[in-house]
Amino acid sequence: MNKDPYQIIIRPVITEKSTMLKDKNRDVCFEVAMDANKSEIKKAVEHLFKVKVEGVRTQIKVGKERRMGRNSGMTKNWKKAFVRLKEGEKMIEYFEAV
Image (cartoon, rainbow, N blue to C red):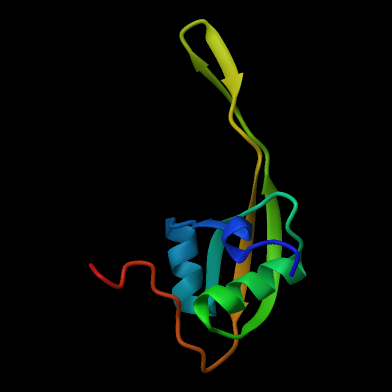
């Protein structure tokens, strides 16, 4: 592993779709570094959360143009990874203390 796992996995993505996929297909969604590949993402998740990963799918989300009055700019591009856990593995919980 070339990078630190904390530099590869940036944050979990918590939306209605990701929550549905987590309950239905055992998929967990993360925002990851743009230059991370699937094998690095798999190793980082296995190292950080102590689970076995079955597969990884990635998406690049293109930034949108945003305006504030007459000023306009672009939001950044970012990469999303859907990580499928193997059967029998414990589910990753984001809010264990709540």
